[in-house]
Length: 296
Ligand code: GUN
Image 1 (cartoon, rainbow, N blue to C red):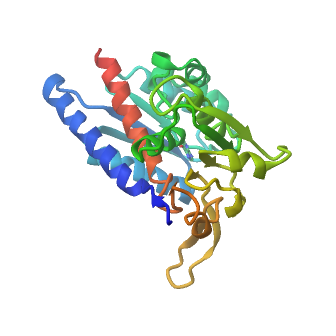
Image 2: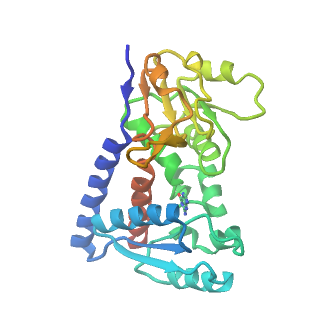
């Protein structure tokens, strides 16, 4: 039987509608809206397109949005001063510094300068620690893992006691999603294994997975025969495998052979249209959450 497709595009729509409703309520009750600043240094086309989408989405939800573009040659000192300004701005609840930064700037130094309570990317070590502790401590979850967990929950996949196998151990996806799935709570309580480039028998681990989360950045890494029949497969890979000559757009492929895998899995995310669209929705949710905390 063909797997149910978990559409990130559809789930994003639902989440954004929920966020918009809460923003409207906040405005009515408190006369305030969530405030997000996006800081873009330089003019990398990819970064510009990501930031533009974040800004447009924030505005569409009624957020107070500041797009603070800075020249490529801004000094580290000036960038730190800018962050300090927004750390102390009560109308700003989320500060996002688009990565990567130019080479002369130490991104670790920049990320730790952001007030952890405004760190809607959840990249600050304090938020990484809070995620590890779990429960009420974890105010923000990083956006891509949060999107993955939301897709698992909204697709009706049982996580309690499930075998979750995470392929990849990055700081942005693999490590945090593994920790989140192992925590106590909704969409969690799973038994988690992280596999990576040094794992001896990747296939054997994947075959056990009730929920297989693949974030390796290797097109077609997971073979169809590694997928447990009826399992939920979340493909985080976004790999450019060519160019459509007619449209001039990149042809994208995930880390899983989607066409073959959908005949075995119970539920599966497509690429594109799967995890990708979820990230910005979760950024908006984090910013809303931050504003709600500030009003408490
Ligand atoms: N660059 C690519 N993805 C991201 C992201 O999620 N957050 C930030 N700050 N920069 C990025």
